[in-house]
Every structure is written in structure tokens, then in C-alpha cells.
Amino acid sequence: MKRTSLLNQRFVNRFVAYLAICMLLPLFSGCIPSYKFNGSAINYDIYKTINISDFPIRAALVYPPLQQTFENKLLDTVTRQTRLQEVDGNSDLEMTGEITGYSLSPQAVGEDAYATETRLTITVRVKYTDTKNPANNVDQSFSAYRQFSSTLMLTDVQDDLCNEICTELVDLIFNATLGNW
Image (tube, rainbow, N blue to C red; front, side, top):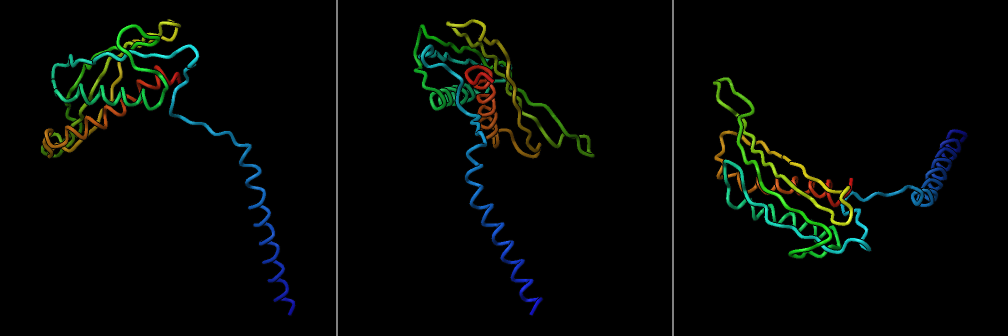
């Protein structure tokens, strides 16, 4: 009889402790700050417009769809994560640049001395101008890459790789300019 009541008492104690934790957890969760790492740190009372110019390809190796892919991703990110109005001509913020690099390089070498992995690297030079506060200006190059098996043809993976790389580049550029990280 004692063993049964002892087991019941342990069960009740654990159940009460579990219930107490469940009831107190919502109280403490309001004390934990939450941070959002997408979006911008822009004062919309000061900044209302942005001019994003074309980013022509100036690389030695040219993949024509790259320019449009990059520009669309950049414009889409700025319009989704800010309230800035994109305009042509004079604006509060300006973003210009060019695609300066599109290169392939062997990465891993197999037993037969042939490359088993190839790296596609894209580099973009960005000039970001803040007409209200020149201290925020940025003139910087950004690079990103993806590796793929050398058994694959570049033409078979090029679109997917360029999309992935452009997404990463746009995130880097956004955070260095409008994100104000």
C-alpha cells in the first residue's frame, strides 16, 4: 500500500510542477525580446525614394540572362522590404553598379587529376549613394559562389546556380546598404 501511495504522490508532484511551468511560461515569454533580421533600418520621414539603375555585365565571361535576373531580385527585395518608392532620376537614395565577374574555377581534383567540382563565382560592384547623409555611402564589391559537380554541364545548372547566387548577393547588398547592419 505504501508503495502505491508513494508512486501516486510522485505522479501528482510531477504533474503539478509541469502544470506550473506551463502556466508560467507565457508570462516569461513576453519578456524575451524578438528580433527581425529582414527589413530595413530606414527613417521613412527622411527617405521616400530610391533610384536603382541598370547593372550591366562587364565581366570577361557573359551570361546574358544574369543581368535581368540580378536586377529583378534586387528591385523585388527593395520593394518587399522597404516602403521606398522606386523612381527614375533624382531620389533620396541611389544604387548603381555593374556585374564585374562571372567565372568558373576548378575546386576539387580527383585521382585522375581532373576536377571533380567546379565553382561558379559572380561579383557585383555597387555604388550606394545617400543624398541626405553621405556618411552612409557605400562603394563596394560583393561576391558569392556555388559549387557543382564537374560531371554536369554548366548549361544544365547555370540558371539555378545564378538564381541562388543572385539571391545571396542581393541579401548581402541589401544588408550593407539599406539594412544598415
